[in-house]
Image 1 (cartoon, rainbow, N blue to C red):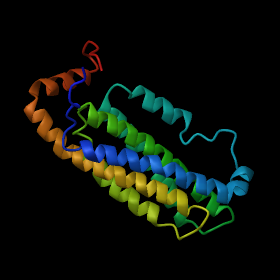
Image 2: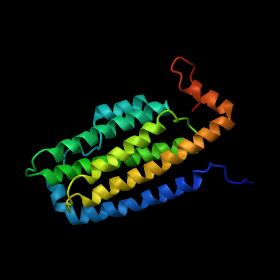
Image 3: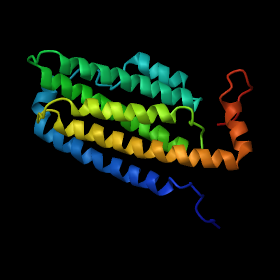
Length: 207
């Protein structure tokens, strides 16, 4: 017989709302594909991954330590943030709109994957308190960067997707700051276990 649903903390409802919002986002992607399919096909790359192999490997290496993984995602998004700033700061040239579309599309895809990780850490009470204040500050900076390029139908839709992802991320991160502070104060054994899980010199602890 099933018992009542597990308590997910004060961020539980927000977690579900963020997931629903992200489920709607593929509709925007379909619209973008229908409108810009010819241009996108003409400029398609053999490898359309949003991350380089080096970035993928860095995330894989950080898979078992949540704070490290959060900081790795932040580093990857900082790279895209810098690339967008560099593109905006240079004189506009042919191909600008498509290059901006590709960077924003990458940013949105990476941010969505990051959000999925945060959702998991929130639901499982994985301790990422160390990273959350820096993440909240970074989200505000990234949002400013994404709004900098002038309106352009080539990338407006993917920019909205990226900004929506950052909005979800900001809501999750700020709620986790409050929730995790309360949770680990009330559950010192859980805090101890998280420290053991994050200790590279400690015997492996089940995740």
